Image 1 (cartoon, helix red, strand yellow):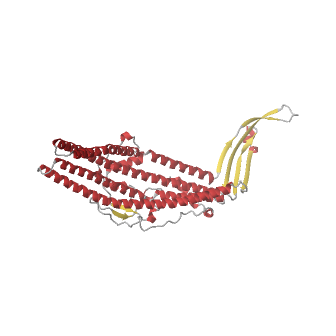
Image 2 (tube, helix red, strand yellow; image 1 turned 60 degrees about the horizontal axis):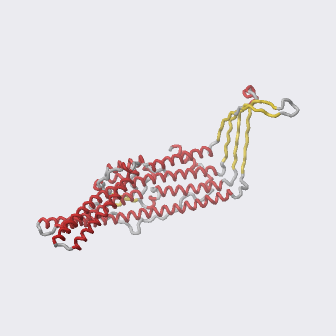
Image 3 (cartoon, one colour; image 1 turned 30 degrees about the vertical axis):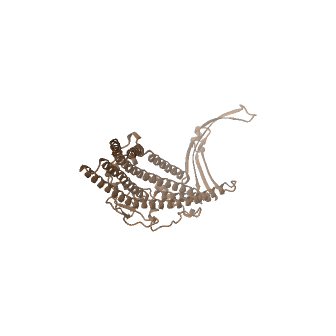
Length: 481
């Protein structure tokens, strides 16, 4: 890491006049909207489930998932960040890229020094008039050779800096993958908890439906219910039971996907947490648009891609100008060991080579135009990345505001259904209400409970999405700019 930063600093500081080659290296100016969504968001959303989430201006903490106040969730995220094969692969790919940068810098910015020792025994032809026709002799040669190419116009230096920017881009992409992995684990944990609660409520709903169908069938046998009532109750029971297999399969699929995120096999999937063990964060950090550009790893990666493309275009332009290579060698040689070790065996050479490209079949110009087009594409991609980031934040903010209202209304419906259930049960115990009415009220309550559970889980998951969409400042662990 230290070597990478040293090399990057050297590259960034050493260009000087070389910056004249290539297009503008700074990314294009982007609009800085006062608010993200089409309609300005209130500083606090409507209260839902007794919790009012407030917008706080500023970046989120690096370990934002701790805001859910669940040690079990924190442990799952830590396990995933440690054991995920995809994250480990990206980490090693980044390490490989940094070593590649180190190799290129060492090859292009520093002189090369080589030591060679070449003893040989050779058989050569002699003049036809001499005898014997061949001659055997030994050669001993040892040299220290060095060469250095002066990069007057910065072609190699720009190429190195372009590669450095590509490594920086990979570092930001790694951080984006790391944050996405944490967000996916949090959302999978929330969904697993939600689906577990939904399965339990649906199982109760199916049980009540079967009881109600049997009770109305018994009434039909006694003549106090019509055949249509009996068939309708049977159909309702079957429809409720038909939703249960898919819901169970979905719950298992989420747990299995969660296991893979953690680096486990699906059969080692963790048990779903109780939904009530997860606390909804009450303060949600939201950065202003200008700060978001310096926090989201995907935007920073797109910015690094613009820098890299500009440097590559500059290197292609600088390669059209002359370069000077100096070389020198010193050693010893001789046809026998005594000559090799004596002062007479000293050998040396000094040379210079000035190269000016003249004709390469248009290859150099085409390469220059190629990297200029790559730069234009990188600029357009940067704009698209910024706009997509703004949309991502806007959509999440709108979803959270609507989630609060959905929680309020589904809780209201569940409370009303609960009162109806208790009222119907009390009247049934007094003999003023039939059993099937009690079962119907209980079914309505379980249906309302399922909708409420879904709303609560959606609000938690969208909160995690907003945390992730804010990115993280570079001082809290992301790659330095």
